[in-house]
Image 1: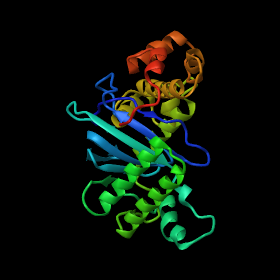
Image 2: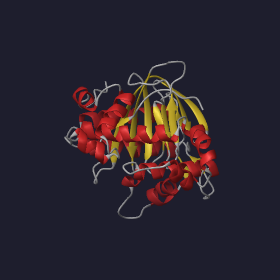
Image 3: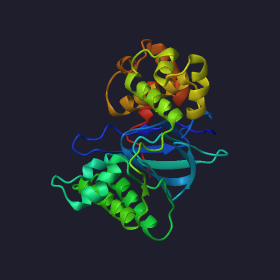
Image 4: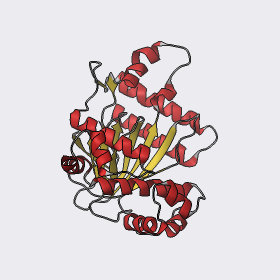
Length: 302
């Protein structure tokens, strides 16, 4: 798999009573040509991505999709996904990560049983690619842009506006029968992707602890010798690089959204040596933690 461009920075975890958060990717925040713009990962939430500028190749499970400025791409829950820029092209992209069950009704109704529940159980899936063309597609993209604007500005009542947009997106996709259907069996993941998903779940849960290659190979259920090739083939980087990059992403969020000291952050993300943490942080971001914190207040997305 081809690869290029940088760390992803997500906003802080969503509010418990409003499970929506935003991410922002900019290929200018790149330190190494071997980095991907969207690192290889998965989550239980759904995600709407909107490309502001340039283009990106998204890999969703085993499918490659080229997404250009003005287009959108949708990640269904538990889909392994990553993205890279080709030929040094620049790209900026938003991600809206949310829990679809926030649209559930307290009282059972036809909207939930006929349409929402099938999405939640995996029988229905959102289409992966939404081109910006006239029709329902442009309407969906307009609602995605409205969600981004509401999350940026957060005026009084913005939660209602976001929820309304999510319902509108669902309505367009359902009314135009643009969703994909499955026969109720476990979705898309083949054995290789399933092994990889278990591996990165282990990393995400235990990144602040000591992790060995033997641990990761054991979780994947394959030998250590085969694990290196297996992991790099899917993620585009070595297991050690992936773990360190994930730790630095977590450190970046803590630097940006908390007032914890550099030492406390180093310990919290799994580094027992603050000097090595600073060296590693600079390797992946180009700055020391203190300088990065000074340069990165709330990100200007426009």
